[in-house]
Image (cartoon, rainbow, N blue to C red):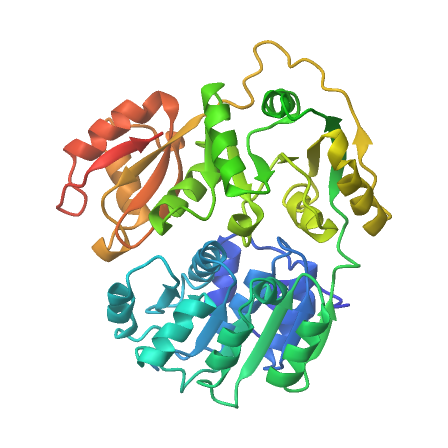
Length: 461
């Protein structure tokens, strides 16, 4: 165990230390304190840490610290199991790199036209964050060269194996130089992870902080339902135990779509995340949920892999999964950073065996049965206070958060306090606006040029 959690004691470049202060990253998390000295020293690391433990900042700071900005070659590759996780990782690395000028970070995932990515690759990014399938496709076509690679990171390696990416990983490794730093992060240590480590790492240092991490404070309960009243009971438990951000898990994308439709009919602002959405739709769903303009996200397990939204108040299992490990992954998205969360499962008589299997596999886990009390009248915890506004310009238009904030607040516009999170993509961006100011914000954006150009703006409901 490291004796100090002070970032300033690490051999980090001064730009990174100043930026960490700007970001209010005052103390290292457990996984950062254990892995960063090793990463900075250039060692291969095999780390086990839970989602939300701060691992992205750990490997992000490690690879940024050794980056040569004047070498216009791909020097770091981070592979993630899903597009959503890759986008989140790229966003976090950009935040960490803000004070280092001219760093180019590119997300290379499916769902974006190959032509656009190829053009971006020709502009020599320093860091690639991507998914195995799309990265391999660019390597095969010769549009991506890893000859100068210094750091290779496998994030959520166990999930990557679960999703069947082993063949792509083997193929990608063939394009890398033997001399490199290889970092594996995983929430679990199945035997296959040890096999991969033995093949791709050189004398790796093993770090496991899962036992020392503060256990999540999650109240786990279940409610008896019938096939006929499951949807109605879901509405009741949401209104009783739900908070500002609620995540509902369904086992199939058909249920996911039907539950979303039902909740909307009940006046609940719900969005769905499943495999039938294209990338633009997926981005919009995740933005609306994370910026608090939708109170409920309904997702399948596959679609939610890599999802890392902070401050989720409650998890609801529309149905229990068949595997205890999936149950653990589901509920682990609440009760983070010392906060208390709640996990509520709906169970029919014919599904009790799933509950028994989960409790058998997780002996320290007890799900208490509860009746569903009536919700308090006037309860508005599920009513979002924000609305998402989409603007028809993004990173390719050289727009920055300050540009949008300036356009919204200039000359009698809306107050800055009414503006929430701002999310940028290549061709468009989103900004969260307090409901009371949405109409005025739309007028302000429509009437006022941003960097000399007018953009279309519309509210997303």
